[in-house]
Amino acid sequence: MRCRKCPKRAVLGMPRHNTAFCGPCLTEFVRTQVQRAIKSQAMFAPEDQILVAVSGGKDSLTLWEILLKLGYRADALYVDLGISGYSERSREKVERFTRDVAESCGAKLTIHTVKEDAGAGIKELANLVKRPTCSTCGTIKRYQFNRVAWENKYDVMATGHNLDDEAARLLGNVLQWQEEYLQKQSPTLPASVAGFSKKVKPLYRMTEREIAAYAIVNRIDYLVEECPMAKGAKMLVYKDALNRLEAESPGTKQRFYWGFLEKQKKAAASSSIAMAHLDQTTLQPCDTCSQPTTAGTCSFCRMMARAKNPTR
Image (cartoon, rainbow, N blue to C red; front, side):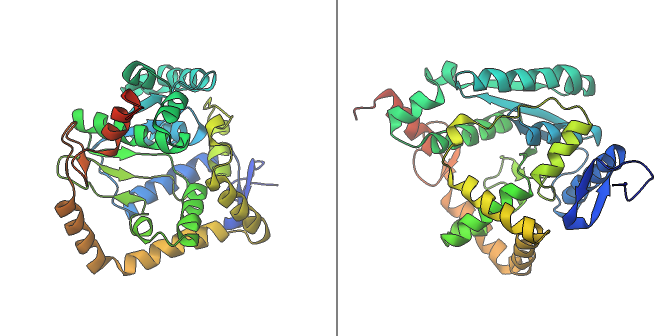
């Protein structure tokens, strides 16, 4: 199989685009797609300071690398969840990438250790508060991401969610008709409260397979194994269903998610004004930590209070 742009041998075929690329052409293609996503969704400007959530996996490290190579000012945050074995390996990948790539670009890494802050790892915390591990993890990561961005005045928070992630999330939201989540499922979400950062997903145009190929071509050393706490998650079921559809009809994921974004865009004029007004009028600072919340105390602070007093 030959590259469609040059005479070299292709390293990746892309059926949804009916094309194939060699390593250098794939690198150019992926970076162009990310730049297109940033521009089309008005994610951020060259002068903005970006905070990237990194986990040690291919998506987050690839996102950080691409933003740095494109010349953006991007630092990163890693949340050490205290999962025996897995967290040590993922943290090592992040720290190595920081030494080998990020520091030479003037970027820095912030590490938050859950066990040092809460006195227990994510699994123990989930048991204490009697919540699923993934739910507990999501609450902690969102809180720390917001906290670090707010305290250090980052303009934008970026995550490595890709096309597979967003299509699977959309499928789950549609199957359960979760209209509130559908309204907020977008590659760019404005800050809900003044002083906080907007949230963006610059990899939404790229599939997991394409990102993995980019990482290999560009020698990004990432953790291959999935989080052991994710076993049995519904998101994996949705991804499997979409992968089967994609195999039969290349481009299914793209048509599904991008089609949703187009319809969302057409309906945005009035709904976005209403949503912005709703957010500003219902969100308020948490009584404990000052993070935005719809209640007097945010979900993170309520969870941590319950963890300290599990019998209450």
